[in-house]
Image 1 (spheres, rainbow, N blue to C red):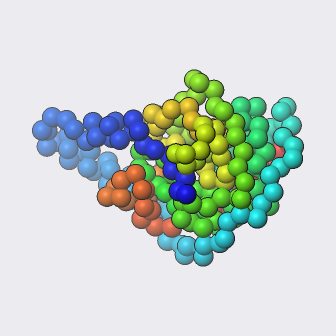
Image 2 (cartoon, rainbow, N blue to C red):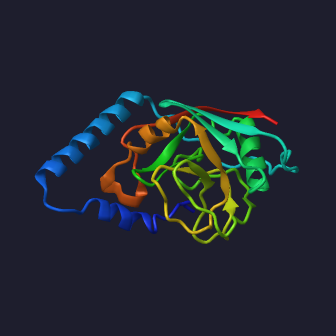
Length: 229
């Protein structure tokens, strides 16, 4: 089943952003800014060959949580640059332990961001590159009721049928100011370095594909590593 992050409130926000007064000067300026952003993204993300899809599953659920007093950083070395994510093992202990174990086992290496919705999220973590893959198990951390999915927050994707807080291996990074999502998605952590890389990747989604977020070029996670403990 496809693990998706539903746009919900994001789409109306994007629609409103596209509306406005009939001012040709403003429109030209906005278009120039958009073109400049697209050029910057293209320059920071070179054309690379997409890795061959792998089979999913085969992973074992961690038996222990991470040290609650430790400091863990997940680094994603991508074809567009490096992204560092501070793991929040206190809010989502099972999710944190799972993702750290998967990263240390090389599960995320040579995978892609298979879903890129500009102004919303970039999503990865599926070795099959189809949006349906996972590690062969799931964990669950119910998010706090006041959870907000704002820019830079990293959370876990799930199917509509799965209970709130369920996660496998697929994660997403919020690229818009506020994704407007309900507190249904376990929070892995927050980007602490490389937000510019996230922003560049976030522009590489085909607007015509809508919520499907079809990438316009391959963005590869070459290697995922974890430091700290």
